[in-house]
Length: 301
Image (cartoon, rainbow, N blue to C red; front, top):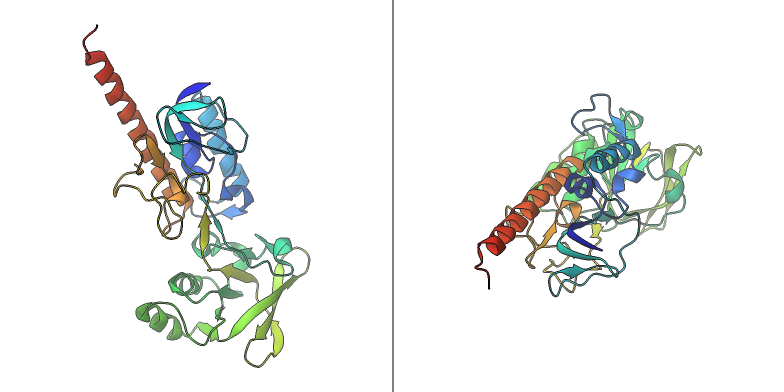
């Protein structure tokens, strides 16, 4: 089967461009409080269902399969045989790195999150003690943001110093609502079976273990972009994110575009992913139109 455009990924970026394949971090998210048009918030899976329904209404063929290979060496591009496409939008996203703590799977999205901006305003975290794991700029930003909602924020840093920039570290250490626990790691997530209410923590220098009663745990230890399929074929940065031409979604290969978290290591929001998905769709449409006009203007033999 041949298509003018194939979109790999079905998060906000993929469905905004009108998608192909299955996935999206929103399917594992509970309340989404910051997406425009939903003043009372909306559940992540419900929002994804609406994206999907809207795409189908406009004639998108949604194929729920995992793409196992892709050849970008020449146009038309090839995905799983016998799929070919004139253009491809890669919107495979990025997943938050996890620690694999005991109890983590039980309380993921029930007290544990990897995005303070996405989830910090959720009622279960308001006016409650919260914890952030990480020592870089992301951890400093997330902890500072969470002070707007939580009663107090603890930052667990496994070393005796922060990796964050000086200005971010200063902001973190000077905030009265933030306590940094140096040389400390979490060893277990505990709760009542429904929601997180405690962390078991350990001091790496003394070996002392104890409890840290918190209602929320936020990971700020990085993300892993889903670029394994194309990393050897497209220009990516040192962390594996696809590099695009500034101000566009165009990749290093003509006809291949990247949208959403797979090329965005800074914002990682549903709304920014949707916006870049729209950009990719418009750029694909423009490229195909230009190529068709070029063919029409060629003299007949």
